[in-house]
Amino acid sequence: MRNLLACLLAVSILILSSCKQSLTDSSTDLKKFLSPVDSGVQTGGVKMVEIETPKGKFKVWTKRIGNSPTMRLLLLHGGPAFTHEYFECFESFFPAEGIEIIEYDQLGSYYSDQPDDSSLWTTERFVEEVEQVRKSLGLNKDNFYVLGSSWGGILAMEYALKYQDNLKGLIISNMMASIPDYEKYNGVLRAQMRKTLVDSLQNYEARGQFKDPTYQSRVMSEYYTKHLCRLPEWPDPVLRSFKHLNEKVYVLMQGPSEFKTGGRLITWDRKADLPKIKVPTLTIGGKFDTMDPEHMKWMSTQVQNGDYLYCPNGSHLSMWDDQKTYINGVIKFIRSVDDGGFKGK
Image (tube, rainbow, N blue to C red; front, side):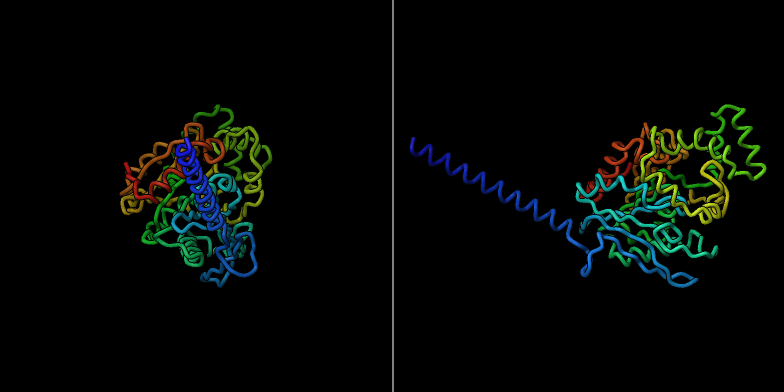
């Protein structure tokens, strides 16, 4: 009996010691993940990154959450000239998985400098901006993931086509590889609306009355709430992103609205160049998206090492209206690339 008690006591001490070590290791890992990246006065992860452009130096806003040596995710917002704010839902999930996220407002967006020079608003210049941000934040091929949503997806594709040797993984969220094809799909979605509504919208558009309250109200109720974000009440981060839109940049590049394309991007098409992308790539589409989900599925077969995430309840902002599918799929992709287990389809 005495030997049995001694054995039980020894086992209990071993278990307690193991648990204590596990808790210590866990808290050490957490402390390391939450430790500041930069020294000096702490700013909650916010850093204004200086960039050089053909029109001089400006600063763009970034915010790091977490500190991972191998999984750092830079978020490229849509628009052009929306804000990082609609990505704030990522904060509820990715840090808990040990994935560092970097929110970022591109030049011209609300939290960054907003120079009034139309020559700055080109895809090529934005690509060079992303590269300068990468260098400033110390991101490299061993840790650097990019997630581009909508216009950010165009920017992500363009960046990968020029600088993919600096990337560990690429995520193209809710963006087709062709604006002309996107415009055609817009016609498919319009055809699903009642004819009287389409005729009414086209009358406003023919007169250039995109600011008319009636036109804007109908686009919101008949298009945005069905294809942009399907939640019955739009979350505050989404509303703030819309509120802070730099409309001058947006209209110049995209056109008057998500419902009516135009601007400098009107002929953008990279379908033929997708096979040049060799880094692990995830494309994301939603059933109710403004973009064609079948096209985005096809994109995953054109890159050299791709996979597709389909959000059956999602629209253009699937990270909100099909959140579980979207977030879990992105986390799974990043972890599979990180541990070397990713195999494209």
